[in-house]
Length: 281
Image (cartoon, rainbow, N blue to C red):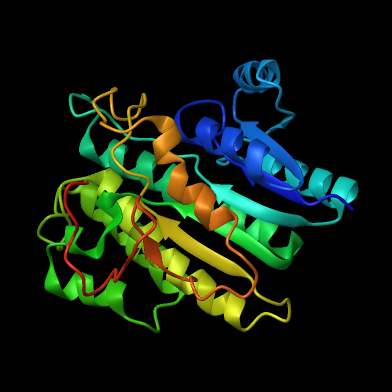
């Protein structure tokens, strides 16, 4: 049975560059997935013109039905999964006029709870030695949480996914009353969501360490400040350069020691709890 890699949100930006790089380096089938079928198919055709052979499947990470349909397809067609890159995410622009409460609920829904949805659906398909890469951000470093008590909750080595889910629901509720900063949060929904992704990756690795399947690995990664739609093309790195560390993590060799870590865009391991935030981003 073919080895299989999946990239969520793969039709543009870093996701597209990751899919492209995996097509060149991964010894199996690469699925570029996207919410919008037309855009996803167009991205696949673009790569085919470069001599690459990606496959496409529609995947809306916010929709249970879409995620379960994709899970069934992978299970029926391949019987398993070897690489999952959780890339799909959103970010409101700095000049967005949406109330912060809306920005908070939508951003956390997509960037955190939808990543949880995809993980819970597809993790049962992971084969031994599978690699999971969760796209975080420099905004996802623990130092982005100003409140000491809140920071300690995130840093707790015994934090569970249920507890983390609850913390993120508390953020959404606090945003509704504009009391999130009093509660220890920064005034950034995107940062809150990505801190959660980084914390989740640590929790998921602890779960993998107890799994009967050998050598399951998950890491969180900051891809760098990349020139994409999300950064309004203000990023200094190319999408190809932004894909470097995610691809590196997707292709980690068997029995690696790099697991449950927070990885910088140059492939270095950053202590998410204790290290200062590296600069430049």
